[in-house]
Image (spheres, rainbow, N blue to C red):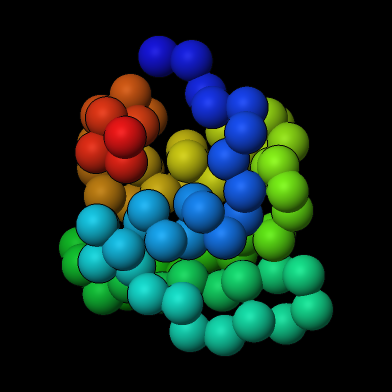
Length: 79
């Protein structure tokens, strides 16, 4: 599945609420997300508009790895 090219950092943070992630703080242009689903996990998302494809891919890989699902399955849940 192709990564979206127009997704913003804030938009991704809002979509990740589906997986139980919540915004815990904002420091400058970075948003910190925390989830306690499948153990505790913290992730940082830059509040860029749009997110660079490489950064988006790395963020999605980390989140998919934490939830023990593939990146493609994660993208389908976020769609």
